Length: 282
Image (cartoon, rainbow, N blue to C red; front, side, top):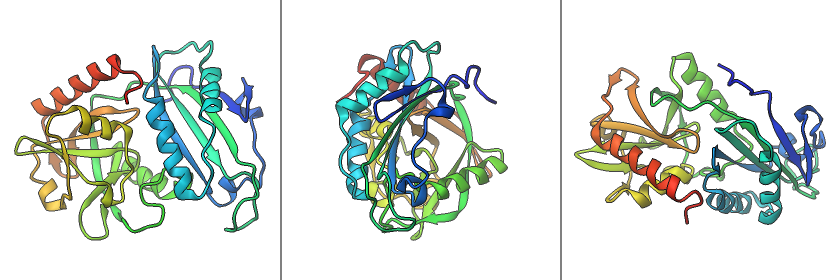
């Protein structure tokens, strides 16, 4: 369902604010369009403002390095964030930051530049407290050159999410080429196994999720380690994390059903408390 006021999208491109997103453009030969040579971030906006901006901008730097792009100007990006949020009529929403190589060849050669910087904001609906997920038929390769990079080359995730939606699920889970749990198309996954909160490591080719990292920081004893599909199926509780979902309990995974467990409830309560107290956590 389209959120009420979803037409209320504001876009800022290279220092210029556009109230009409249709008039905000970049070149047709921008390398982010031609070859997926760009990186991005998506962060949540609450009534009090955007969450974890510093962590998102730091991850944007890491993605840019992996893509071979220069670091964007964080001060300028913060100006863009302020611009698209000024005068907003909604409380809950999303900011998308995109940083591309700029003009380039019609192929895989390096872009000519200069890079393009885009910040956009739109309202969003609060995700449901629980969800259904499915296992995807395609695998993640942890050795892929772009593994763990939030790149604009998102075709595999788009296809995976469409496959999940076709099975009445909101997320699809990738397994690695060697049989370990990896990640969702837009979320990290956690398990409660014998009372312990565990999640796959970055070596499983996953995105270093901001919410994931904060759960590992804030929840005592939370750990990351390789998790086989067989072990994952023994979990008592399963939950997803992402910038828009925060902590979302899984109640159905393929043919398995789960209750919303006490550990998941406590992790969510702690995350809600900490994120309100620290809107830009270190």
